[in-house]
Amino acid sequence: MEVLELARWQFGITTVYHFLMVPLTIGLSILVAAMQTQWVRTGDPRHLKMTKFWGKLLLVNFAMGVVTGIVQEFQFGMNWSAYSRFVGDVFGAPLAMEGLVAFFVESTFLGLWIFGWDRLPKKVHLACAWAFSLATMASAYFILAANSWMQHPVGVTFENGKPTMNSIWAVLTNNTALAAIPHTLAGAFSVAAAFLVGVAGWHLWRRRSNQDVWRSSLRLGGWVGVAAFAVLAITGDTQGKLMFEQQPMKMASAEALCHTEKPASFSIIAIGDVAGSNCEDVKTFNVPALLSFLAHNDFKTEVKGVEDLITEYQAKYGTNYPDDPALGSLAGKPIDYVPNLPVTYWGFRMMIGFGAVSAGIGLLALWLTRRDRIPSGRWFPLLVLGGIATPFLGNSAGWIFTEMGRQPFVVAPNPSGVDGVWMFTAQAVSRLTTGEVWTSLIALTTVYAALGVVELYLMRKYIRGGVEAVMPPPKKDSDSDEAEGDTLAFAY
Image (cartoon, rainbow, N blue to C red; front, side, top):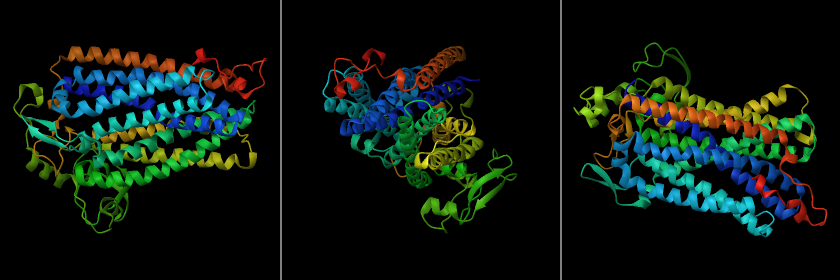
């Protein structure tokens, strides 16, 4: 493999791995803050136990997210230095804002929350929980604003061969970002909800102590999961309409729409090889005219296919790569404007399918636990524990579709934006040897695999330990609720 392919594999592995931790941290931090709010408001020890148990798991995941996230920043200079020079003037502001929020606000208030249980007033301590929880969402906002600029560059002028930012407000209020943010947050709540349903359902099925804690946790997760899927459907529709405008090739590829149709049908599933841009050997089960509605809110509009879009892209952005030695074997070669069709087509359906399955499992769990019922079948823990994986897979498939569908661009052109503000992925890679990239790829993959073992071990340990593993024994010299609320701070 060449440097470009190796560098893409490395960034893909580390990014998808890191993104396994991110949505759980975002969703679970808000839910934990809500649990603590209920405890402060009602004094019900059930909510305190919920806060302590789920807060412990949150902290394990948060620590792993920080460790794996740092590498993402380094890779801009390691494997993608040409890209960094191109986008540096734009990315500097949102990434600096994210750093300030993540490492100052999140870290400061998370530390106060961890060690402040028996030292801070209840309401001040609760405010710390909400501060670091909301900071995780703000951190995601700035990252998504930077990523959305790659999908739809705005707020810049093109000077001396690279974009120069002239409006941070335009970057932060990019309509692509405003559509991506609620969609991503809903995906995060879907992950956290499935996590609650799976772990709490397993404890509930075992019929051990603290059944009120597990029942409340499961039902909270079930309702949040159903609501999150509804938001995902609405925001996903908004994102889809924007993609038809901004990146028509991506959406045509997601539908294996190789020929222009008017009206265009929505492909539910394909039988055959979707890898070819002419799709001659592919049979699909379609919903007539639905794709036209998803694209333009009517059932008659034309939707362009891959083959027609190739001609348009070639007219706008050229037929061949520049004859630049930095491009390696691609120098002067024809540009392939069609992303990997099997990845985009099936990734799009995996994203939707796994999200629907996750919501379905949550809804079923709510039904099975109605009126204080406890499922007794051995299939129940297998179902809810297996359901934990579904939103993780859906989120990962969604991100892979988003990034792979943009190819061959690392910064996609804005159809109505500044001329010249785009960058081919082949132009973005650093001038490295294959040996250097292989070394970092193997090293990082090995380290990440070891970290995965550590996280799974810690998660399993504290999940099996249940509430008893995170609640200290009551103080014998006090009968106040503060005694029950005290924690072994060092255990965090």
